[in-house]
Length: 419
Image 1 (tube, rainbow, N blue to C red):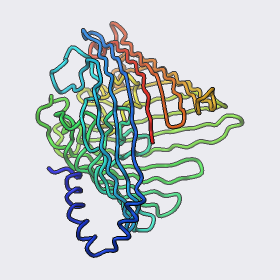
Image 2 (image 1 turned 180 degrees about the vertical axis):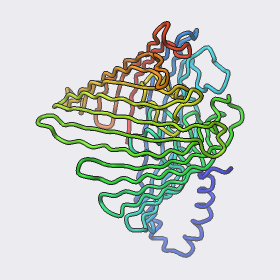
Image 3 (image 1 turned 90 degrees about the vertical axis):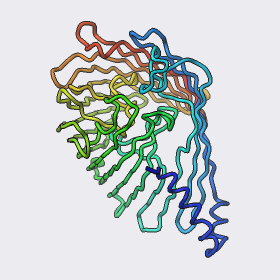
Image 4 (image 1 turned 120 degrees about the vertical axis):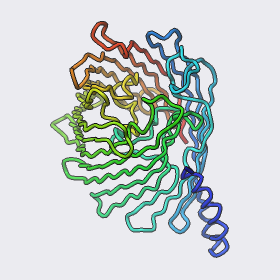
């Protein structure tokens, strides 16, 4: 199956001469003169120590993105962005579907180059934006659809997306996708998911918060060359749900709240059979520079398979150690508390923030102990530079936690520049 990026490149190559031959060259020239550059770079060191693997993984990687976005011609812009990830030093395993470096823990930041985004955006219809091509898509809190921005190679989608705002309060968002360009890169057996996907999301802004209703239909093709558990056909699903998120002042405290509920069942050619539920609740209180968050997220499991979110930005959920990227067969119940600090104008920094998170995990079914985790992060921003250091400490409880989950420590130091 041809990717949308190849189709788009061919379409642009064929269309531009025809348009140029019949249209005003001044329109095209004006759009090109208004082009804006795209540039960002991220330097990262990551260390992973995971029991019982014999080696520690160390990865020093550099990501560079370079591209441009034109001005409008006939209410249409064109964006092209390339990406390169360079392995500067270290030893690590970058792909779980391959046997190489099996003694090392996984750090999914493989070296490589590829087209990150290649898209046309049209705004001819009133209140409507149509995006065609390889693009970034983030919906709601990215629990179901996101770009996995934490990894060096982000996740993008070959798709057509239509976003319509019939009123200032209502947003209708619909996407048809044919390929998911995953964080493992184009050279990995699991680097691409092919198939048909429909993402529908409708959101209305009330005075008390934004209420979203969504339906996601994913029908992925069988993928050769990967273990059975990694075959995307097993996460083909239809999911329906709703989310409410808002905030309001309460004396001197700002109170933010969010709640999501969803139901999921097998779809397409998935050989598994399941009907599973998901829910999450979160409450955050902020006083001056300080904040406290309490939350719970539950994903059901039936003993064979757990509720799945294969297009999500999963690093944002269930702890930064990424122990539960695949939901356990008996599901997961994640209870957490987070304490944050955010200050502006500290020394030479524009902002300085610190976060501490504690999570307690157990299975939703059978209430098995799945361990706990402490996450810590400090981040500073100076003009266009962002630096951070963070650590994830996951601990399995001996005699209670299933043997599949072992102690893991991860540490990162990172410097990013965004144009």
